[in-house]
Image (cartoon, rainbow, N blue to C red; front, top):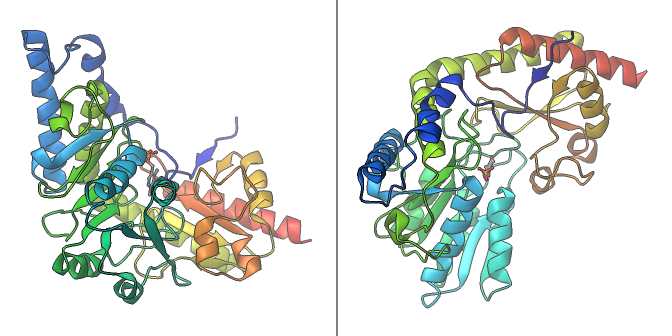
Length: 380
Ligand SMILES: *Cc1c(COP(=O)(O)O)cnc(C)c1O
């Protein structure tokens, strides 16, 4: 049997065996509702708060400032819609960038339909949003800014420290989507000048359908789920305990293994690029040459269109992507590549390889060799 190679970890990752193991008792034995006052409930509550402490500790947040959600999408929506609604009397202007995940972009579009005004900052050819552009876009009625930490399509790390410092001085609430950054870059909300930060479990070998929003204590916020008083009245609904336990376990493992993971991803990246160099095929790396997430490698092979390359790789059992999981499947050019204003042959041949913990350097080499074969074959 041919061995398939999964290089689409920016879309989602397999659940770590230790995570499954950690979750199991919370699906079978510890089933009390954390809000119940009897012993069953108390046991669940204790586990929930331990998981909260663990995840908060990893991003140096106060546990009370961590709100569990159903994933990155909900965390982004909560931050943007909840942050905007709470400040609507102060102003109606929001700033984001044109390279954000759809969870941010579509939440902003929803607000536009409801009386808010949104400025979408451009990105340069490396996928970087300029601090200067942000400074120029800020107005007296700007209430919220959302700029992602690391981009999920090309991996470019945004200058959020500089942006945050500028916004902090002006008292403007700053949210960052750190879903792709968690696990590959140390994150400290104590050091980062951010008010809100989104994370998700399934991008770091945790289960799907669970994430969290770091929500600073003093940040104006209006909840969007109404019901029970869970999560300190910021997000109603019985907590997804087993998944939250899994999230905490995945985050802890990621923290432990971070240096080795980064080193391996760099090696995989280098191996693939060396392979392309040796074969002498035309290619271009999309993104920033220094400020990039180590697990994301976006490359264009101008001789072969994205869809053709993906289809041929898939026939060989190699899973890569055109950009975000949400845009693949459609033939439309990704909004991120569009925003980067790449030359057409480059934009229309971009492939995202994203590495994960189960990958090996040998797999990266095999995948790169296949790419070379496909380029040679289809060019002929
Ligand atoms: C995957 C992803 C999301 C969405 O997270 P879900 O948990 O899948 O809802 C948001 N932002 C970025 C940058 C992502 O990569």
